[in-house]
Length: 82
Image (cartoon, rainbow, N blue to C red):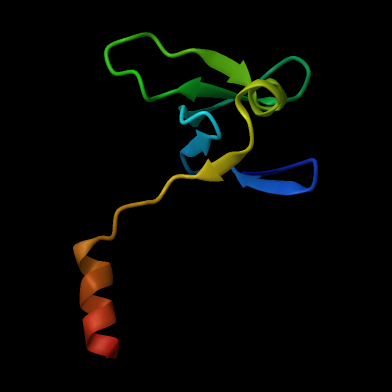
């Protein structure tokens, strides 16, 4: 799912990192106000804080998608294409 907020397109299918360094993942739930709910995922062993997307951006800063690790299959395809 993609969401457009203040002209920025956010891919909610990927984990996101806020400007303050906190990391967030969409819960697949929507708040009563229609905003996607994201849970904090960078504090292992602690219950995750859940915030609506608009609130998260307002108080934690812009979001950027976290890098996904490269798989062995992707390496093989790149080497075969070279």
